[in-house]
Amino acid sequence: MSTRPYRSVLYIPGSKERALEKARTLPTDAIIFDLEDAVAPDAKVEARAILKAELDKGGFGNRAKIVRINGFDTNWGKDDVAAFVGADIDAILMPKVGSAAQLDELAALIPDVDLWAMMETPLGMLNAAQIAAHPRLKGFVMGTNDLAKELNTRFRADRLPMMGGLHLCLLAAKAHGVVIVDGVYNAFKDDEGLRAECDQGRDMGMDGKTLIHPAQLEIANTAFAPSDAEIDLARRQIAAFEEAEASGQGVAVVDGKIVENLHVVTAKGLLAKADAIAKMAD
Image (cartoon, rainbow, N blue to C red; front, side, top):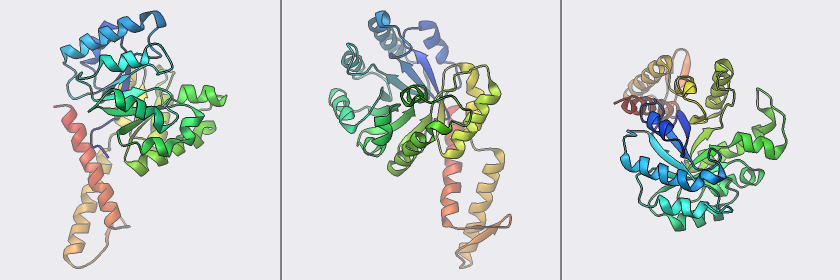
């Protein structure tokens, strides 16, 4: 699993130069440069050129740069890929992935770049394991708006109607060491609702959340970062276990709870994540 943080993954339309310029200054861990849903059909070709020129300028710092292309069932998808061969990007994000065969087709067109998959269809949910197992696949992005549409679900704050799909993707991602980021929260002025959904996704095991507005960044960054209390506990667990091992014991006790090797592995992972987040600000 990558130690790069993906607490916040902000969508930026590839057609909007001002938004692309502002993105260079925003405290987001990753940017999805969107050529698909955020760009009107008559602006697709121009958006591709605008985005390529902005990426060539650089200046996006440590932020992961992910380009969401149009699907191969459109007139733009394959030309989108061709435009970014050799570009300074970290990944290509394919929409509506339903099978690993779609990723094979994408992989053949662009070497040496990680592939990410939008998981947003019932078929994608059912084939999540084979998609996550693809040798070039490094990340899942949950497309919860499209998934809700395909499932014909009603909105519920607890997202119960789509939990089956979310959990299938989580299981697949964790089984194959793939990053998984949660879907967007549409009400970008509803801080409490966003915070609740971030907390839910974090507690489920998501690595971060996709966002539609810069105002959502602080809440996501806070929710998906280790808290001071968690960092303190992790350090104490590691120290206590090392002390127990030195005295020939296999377990330790911290705050009245047993600490075994598996807890130490988790604690070290948490500290590594905290360190990676600190480096993002350098």
